[in-house]
Image 1 (spheres, rainbow, N blue to C red):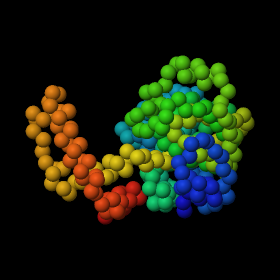
Image 2 (image 1 turned 60 degrees about the vertical axis):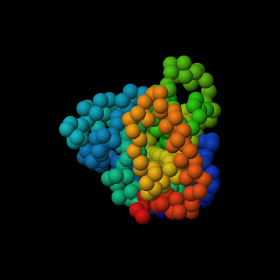
Image 3 (image 1 turned 90 degrees about the vertical axis):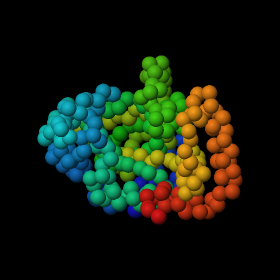
Image 4 (image 1 turned 180 degrees about the horizontal axis):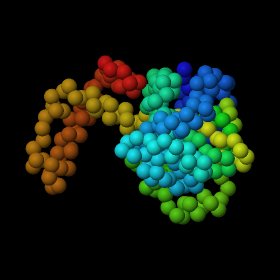
Length: 295
């Protein structure tokens, strides 16, 4: 199991370079379709098998309070189904925590890519929409499992967002919304079962189910790209065994008027360390961390 489960031969392109534009691929039917069915997701909804803190119900951009479907950390039977029947999209985030097959797929993809990831199972009633225009701080690999969904997509408003920096809820403005509402999308994709959309982080989207009677069910594999800063932090973290980096700094060196000079001393020490660091040793430790293995 690997990215090829979602993308087929096109997985090689995603391994070679980070995507910069949205693209749709066709995957072959596989064990994924046998294991992760609409019926399985219906069972999760009807029997309250999801984790409340990772569950959302959204209709036309408005999310309901978790108290509508959970209490004291437990799902309330029947509540999610009632919300779905009322037109709400049900988003079961981090579903790999409770579905062993998806846990295995995520483990394989993490070992293959070095990226951390999670999976959301998203079910939208016919002719309805969940979230409205927004962007994500991760590369979304969206594979349609049942029904159809239309994905209008607009060019990014910000460059390369990451968690807690340039994120959609904080950056959104009414002017942006008005512009999206009044302009044609950069592209629009109509996904059916077996279609997989790769949506780079930052691209604005507002997907919706098509007219008809079918529920739309798709899986979003949220791949968190490793950034240059991630590896830089890994290099710095590898300095921990050296006592000079564990040395304390007196409070007087942390005052507003002295901190810049203290930082200059730290920078000199860091530059000297990085100049002479054996990156092959750091790479062994860092790679084990990237794929989730202990050393």
